[in-house]
Image (cartoon, rainbow, N blue to C red):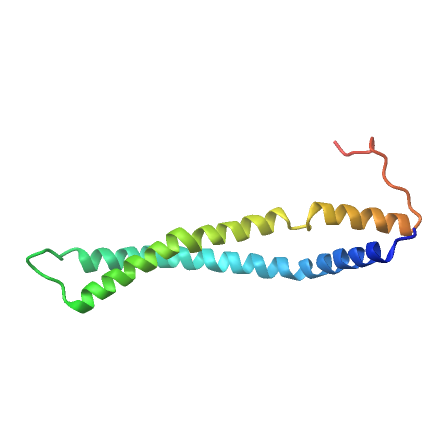
Length: 130
């Protein structure tokens, strides 16, 4: 199969991307699982700390500056974990699992080119597995 220089360059990029994805997918999955585990640990602990800290706070019993600072810090961290870290972890895990074998178009192009270069024939459209 004769390819133009631009097509050869694009094919090399696709092959390199596929090779890099073999290792990157494990790193991405571990990152997502680590983020999710951190959220599962941090959210209950921050919630418990925030409830314990603010349970006895009233307007008559003014909290100290340290208590107010820690309560605001716990609340801010809790919101960051709930609104940013947990959804990012879910997206990373979901996209990694969905694209575990690589991008479908890249896999298709590499498969067609490799079959054409080895002299094999493309599978017939009716030879699908039910």
